[in-house]
View (cartoon, one colour):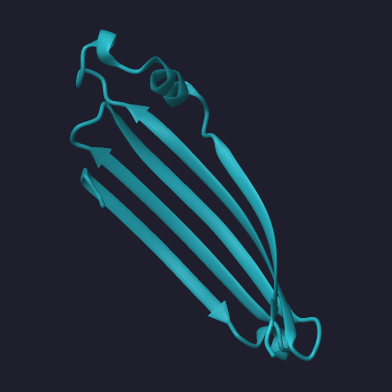
Length: 112
């Protein structure tokens, strides 16, 4: 459910099933989300970069390797709520420099 007054999302997803003319799949996911909340004193921006490789390891098994880099920002909207009502943790987090999350995932699949 999206309760944001103004929300923008831009996504690009691409999968090449025969990368380098081999039985290797290459995928790329790029995502950008911007939310301007109508009921909160904070707005947010999130960016995601996610490449993926998928290749066979046996006749019936494949491995998928993916890397995800996610970066988010909170922006305090000045004058929306009195200073005393603002959450201390959110206010401090909004002043930090772009928190980042990095995930590396390996998935093994098997088909009988």
